[in-house]
Length: 140
Ligand SMILES: [Zn+2]
Ligand SMILES: [Zn+2]
Image 1 (tube, rainbow, N blue to C red):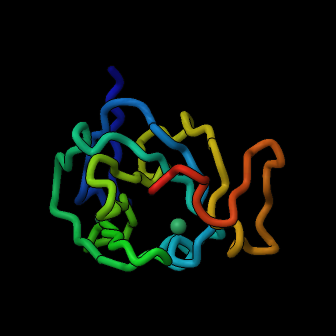
Image 2 (image 1 turned 30 degrees about the vertical axis):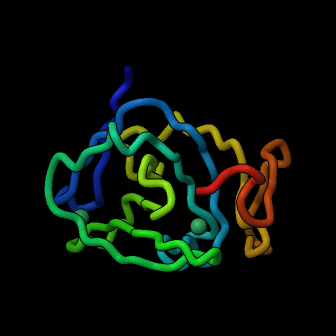
Image 3 (image 1 turned 135 degrees about the vertical axis):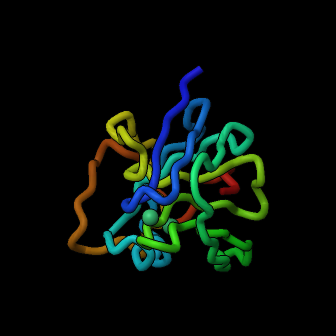
């Protein structure tokens, strides 16, 4: 079983995530754009039971999704790096920012989501499936 380590820019917060991604996505929602400063965010949904903070105490900002669900956005209070997201309806999953892994090169996107708010200056891989919001049947 693989365990991947990661952390924030300043090193105050470190984490480990075990298991394999259940869903790999590029999110184009406005919240991710604002929080990241980028046109879209690369994220992987991993089993929360195998995720743990190994150093530091990140802060949490709770926002509401379009569907009204609470989304906890976890970030380093010192350097501001967004680390992960947890949706109240899916406590079994944690959504990790791929770029915070020590080696983010494993990422292979299954989907582009929330393309309804994608920026016209972003670039898309036509081989990756696109969804206006969430793919049907995915509740996270
Ligand atoms: Zn930090
Ligand atoms: Zn998003």
